[in-house]
Length: 287
Image (cartoon, rainbow, N blue to C red; front, side, top):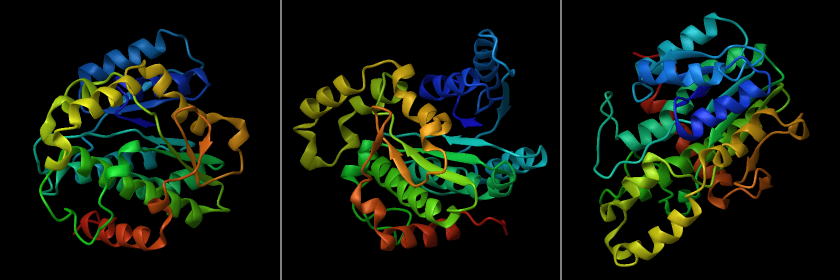
């Protein structure tokens, strides 16, 4: 299953998994886009036809409903949490939670936790969480959903991705020996709606960085101007490559090879703070 799989890196990831012989479920918000995405995958004559399931993963209730449906269908062998978003202006999710943190961390966190029984049944199975180099500008405090200071989309995006990477590496340790392997994949970047739109708004960075942002952005854009098919390779590698059999807790970099994890994501104090916040904001059992 690939979340946010109707276009861009997510669609290329879904196509790669289908090409590898997996029966792929593409998850997205828009049914029309989903139908087109699946039609394009199935036009390549994969061994198993792909399908689309609609879910707005900004909603925790929708995440729970999706997990319930997938669980009812039996074992799951691969989960790729590709969903992600960056916002120029601060927004709340339908649950009243700051949207950057909700979409980039809480959604994949909750979906993964709820699907663990299916992944255990499907073992050997793999979880792949998509990360980002933006974690390098993240504030590393997770006492609350929102860090101190003003809202700056790029920094808050990095913080949410840092939370998810810390969770990913901690989960790998928790599941070690269960047959469920856990990886993070850094796509590096591609020409997507995010890089072509949101990143051009200087408000997404703190005032101290704004004067330099045009220069930094152009450098960033040069590194994110490649095709989505290339950016999807780390996720496909993490989900399917035989060299990773029996291994876990590895970050796959943009070159589709293991890389050293960002140091803050390996700090057990960060992981514990993320766990406390995640359990409070997205309880496995609502109520």
